[in-house]
Image 1 (cartoon, one colour):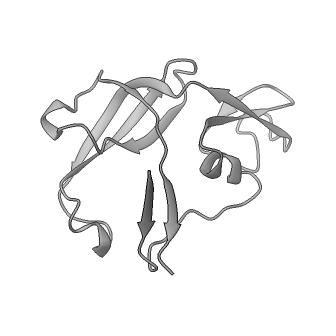
Image 2 (spheres, rainbow, N blue to C red):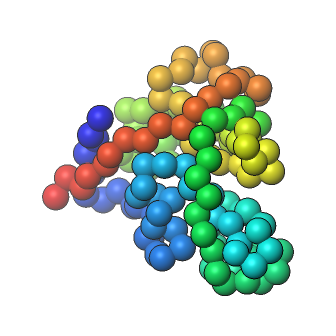
Amino acid sequence: MRKVLPSDWTLPLLEPHTEAFFTSGRMLIQSCTRCQTVQHPPEVLCHECLGTSFEDREVRGEGTVHSFIIVHHPAHPSLADSVPYAVVLVSLDELPEVRITGNLPDTPLDQVEIGLRVRATWNEFVGSD
């Protein structure tokens, strides 16, 4: 599926340590090559040993909703037609200490609950310019 974002939409800054996570279409979690600590979101320093060398660890992207909120006020004017929507915090099956934030666009809001099983999917977004 290809979706077009408005030209004024703010996208994450792609830097060497974040680019793979945002552009690969796979669930990649940063792993320190020095101490093997995994962390998300990706950072320039390891939170455990302050190392600066990382590799991307691919996981299935399956997990359970750890927490959620239903958004009723759009955070950006282009989201006005999307409210209400759910923002979820997902605990990954393979790395339960890692939590990923996302949304559930195809899940009715009354079905969103803590413990709900979910799987990550990606859409290709392009600018409207």
